[in-house]
Amino acid sequence: RVKKKKKKSSHVGLLMVLLCTSVLLCVCVCDPVSPVLQPRGGVERGPDVIRAAGLVEKLQAQGCAVKDYGNLSFEEVVPDEPVGRAKRVRAVGGANQKLAEAVSRVKRDGHTAVMLGGDHSLAIGSIHGHAAALQSPLGVVWVDAHADINTPLTSPTGNLHGQPMSYLIHELQSKIPALPSFSWVKPCVAAKDLVYIGLRDVDPEEHYILKLLDVKTFSMTEVDRLGIARVMEETCDYLTAKVKKPIHLSYDIDAIDPSVTPATGTPVVGGLSYREGVYITEHLCQTGLLSAVDMVEVNPARGRTEDEVQSTVRTAVDVLLGCFGRRREGNHPADYRMPEP
Image (cartoon, rainbow, N blue to C red; front, side, top):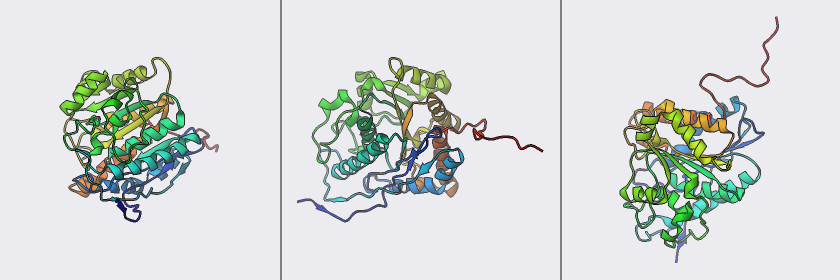
């Protein structure tokens, strides 16, 4: 019989905010995973350090109406033995179900949701909840050094933060075994509605899946060859070729080069520059289609110095500000008027 401990809230945040052009912005901040899921703890502190860096105040200064819903708390399941290779499936499945319900409520109210992590397994709940609320096709832009599309049977590690997209893709459902606490998950994204940007550390099994499903990918090779402006033009043209659909941006901070964002669990050299990382969100904001955002894998415990931690956190905040209208050329309030002498 499975025993449960009392609820804990230290692992998870839920912060709700809204778009600059909207009356209310909803930002969900969440890490549905216990620190013991990842061999490198500390990622559970991500939401709070991003908050402490002034995200809410800076969004408000941009004209966003922001509501912070605090931290989601989840029940820790004990024991939570591996199922095959997959680790902590009961805790992650249950937590993501709760997150999906929260995101769905926010989206049904017409607000924009931003999920702060935490690790990337939270995308199972955030994208599922987003799609459930819209009841229409959803485009996903996945910015990451990693594809995170292993199935429970192909994953070399069993870590669910390397598997989230596989649970959400329609075309992979025949490859997903039944898992405890995952029966609520239904496929909600078509392979043709997914675009990857920044890939540079892809498992052979994932590479096979991406080619099998003909998923649109811009690895760092393409970013280097085309330039980030062309990559973003092609990304948006591809996702809106037949119909304009809401976009869910799932952004792993390790997409950016570790010289800029070293405080993350699985850094990989050769990543996006600061400018490229911010340009992605500036471009998506200008489409008017950005409907939800995940910001994940900020891990203050992985910074060797306070400067490394602060560089990572500041970059995450700047990426998020770009989602909601900040431009590096400068901004001013729409109602600003020059004072008369």
